[in-house]
Length: 343
Image (cartoon, rainbow, N blue to C red; front, side, top):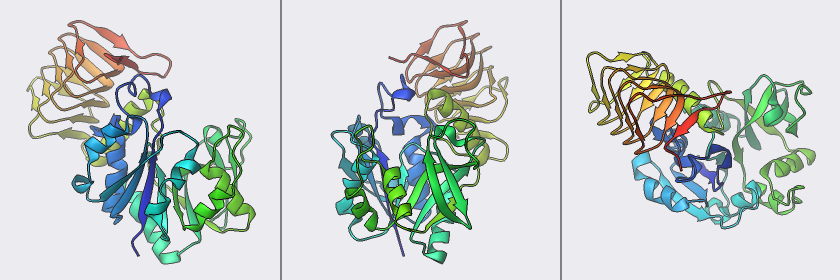
């Protein structure tokens, strides 16, 4: 039984600024590709052939980049959310796409190892639970939603608990399987205190009504790619998962013999790396250049950006097309990366 999927990708991504001044958050690159391509491509490889993207902020860019989905191996459909009214309101916009079918629901900015999609669908096919909710292990789920699990099923969910108060390490991972009855529940769910219709509120209503929602634990990394620093950090995790050596060089990349590469490192097509030190955790995207005697670590150099000679760049993102003068030294501070060339 093939499932459809709905990805909610309409938000403005305010915490990702300035990278979202010129692009929607799902098009922010991680490990050399837009976030949304990792997600939609992973779902397609797991066997989901029809995916609906609910888009809003700068959504035209998503349509232009992804098209009909052929390149990703799926048929893509689009629904527009003109006014943000919460995740539940966004999901209801895809009602005609869902029809009477069961479906996967995901957020358009949550990155997990793609093998999890296939594993989750295999569990669904084997057990056919009423619904499924993915969870990921964290030290303290206070930033998300604490999920309490009993005998493999969700017992209760507490949204944004106070730090240190949770007795579970499971967080709501933002990936679900629902039946079309979820839409009926949403229509009867009251608005949140913020005046929005939210999927978590509907899930709570389902639990209160006695629904048995199967828990599925994510294996490997998990990130909601909330900030530029998150994009840099998860890029390194993805690159390590893509290659045993942690070194990914496109065949059209030009890397000087004198370059020192400390994995994980990804160097894209037509990128030029002179005798510089690259890594650890560096992504040099298509057509970008890094000059000799420069050091670039914990960084992303976006397409067409040029890093001059003798630069020392750590915990940074260099915007697409930006020019970094020779001898520039920049390092992010207090856990945040510096964005150079952003509007």
